[in-house]
Structures are given as structure tokens and as C-alpha cells.
Length: 368
Image (cartoon, rainbow, N blue to C red):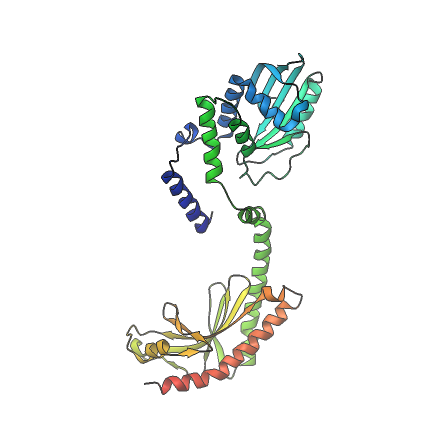
């Protein structure tokens, strides 16, 4: 979780506390995300309220479902073989005296693995062929790992659906009220906008694409440095490469700096090619000022001048941006020619800034 999302969740937590937020029992003991304990809790509720189980089944299977009149057994971690266990396995009898089994797979933050649902379905179809069989896949809305499951025989039910079922019952017990509180708190603390859902669901794909693009851009920046120096070897040379090839800085061979032993008098005029993020570039003129004296000439010059409608301001430590021109790859829709377009733009723009720099320096020299 990045810092922005963390701060958002922190604000939500504070708001919950101010609005009378009350933790459930599993939250108190630090087990609010424990799938096994939640499954056992839910089994207890079903075992003590057959109406809840009936409404749970009816939610997925509709009115054609014949109500249960008796629960014969409820098992958690019901073993189908040496490796596979059903979270909740219920045997019951309905009002038509038919034997039934109810299979519930519960996932909180994890996803289905090894085609569990298919395995459970095949097991029950083989060993309980004379029973009515009901299959459920239960998960919270915020579990974005749940995309599709291995068989359509399982009906998906979200925690929000379960909450509606519980809220629709009359005279909930104290345990049911506590379970409702648990679900509400989970949904509240993990709530997210549709945009954030889409971002997280597609994060891995986007991250991989940006990682690939980032490598291309770093190669482009390195190639640009050698090419630009070759084209302008009588005037400019690279001063330094910074921030993983995100900034290429060039300085004038024949002037525009004052490398005095007195740091209060030192300054350097640069032109730079700078990359911000993955898709935005800037060509800019900058000054590096070593002086901490606000009344020194270079700092007064920076404070009082404006260029190209871009007000001079301290950009990073002692660096001031004097003039900046931007280029965004998005505007060119990453066409096949975007590298060439960017390359040509950078050459043309930096050369233009280089021509303007002599006027700029003359203005600085004459500045009082």
C-alpha cells in the first residue's frame, strides 16, 4: 500500500472511531481476517438458526428451493481427500424429507487454488448422488483476487449479500449482531471506489508495461547524451547523469559559471533534459547557486526575473528553473514514431535554449 492509500485508510479509521465504531469479537482478538475462524463462526450461526441457512440458500437458488426442516450435521474443514478440505460442509433434511448437502467455500483475502471447487463438486457428485446438492463460494467484495472460479456449479455470494440476508432476519441474536458488525467493519475499512478497484485489478499488467517502457526511456536518455554532446561538442558537454538517467545536465564549456573558491560567489548555468515519471519530459534552463546569502546577486536575480511566463522558483535545494518546455508522450499516443519525435523535440528545444542562454547570461552580468 502506498502512502496516499495508507493516509486514506487512516482517515477512514479515525472517522469510524469518531462515528461510534465498535469492534467485533474477532477484531478484538486480532482474527478478523482468519478464514477458518470466520467459517466456524458462520457454522455456529447456521446451526443455531435454520432460517438463516434457508435464506442463504434461497438467495442463490430462488423460490424453487425446498426449505430445510432439520440440520443433521455441520463440519468445518471437511476432508474429501488427504489434501482437500471443504470450509463448511452441512448435511440436512428438507420439508420434503429429501437429504441435502450444502458446500460452502469461504475466502477472505485468498483466491481459489488447485481447482478446489471442481474437486469438491466432483467428490460430492460421486459420493452423495442421492442428495440434493447446493454449492456456494463466499467472499468479501474487497477480495479482488476473485475473478472466476473453476466451475459454474458454485454460486458466488459476497459478504455484502450475506449482510443483506442477516439484516433481513427478525430478532438477530447477539452472536448474529456481532457477526453483522464484523462484516460491516470489514467492508467499511476495505471500501474502495470503482476507479481504485480497476487500478488494483490491473496493477500488475500496468506495472509490467511501465517497467518495460522505463527501460526503453533509460536507454533513450543514455543514447541522447552521447548524441547531443557529439552534435554540440564545441559548446556543451555532459556535467553529470542523475537519478537513474532521469536528468541529463549540460554546462557551457566557455562560460556561464563562476567556480570561485568563495562558495558565496559560486553559480552554474545549465541546460537540462529531465524526465518526470514515465511519460513527461522537460527541457529547461537552470541555475545552481551555492550562496546561502539571500542578498547575493544570483539569488536576487532568480527572485526578480520571469522568463517564458514561467516564474523562477527554487526547484530543488539550490537549483532554480529559469525556463521550461514540456513534452508528454501520452499526447503522441505512444505511436511507432514516439522515440523519434521525442528525440527530435529534445534536440531542437535544447538548442533553442542554448541560443537564448547568452542573452540570459548577459542580462545577469548587467543585473544590479
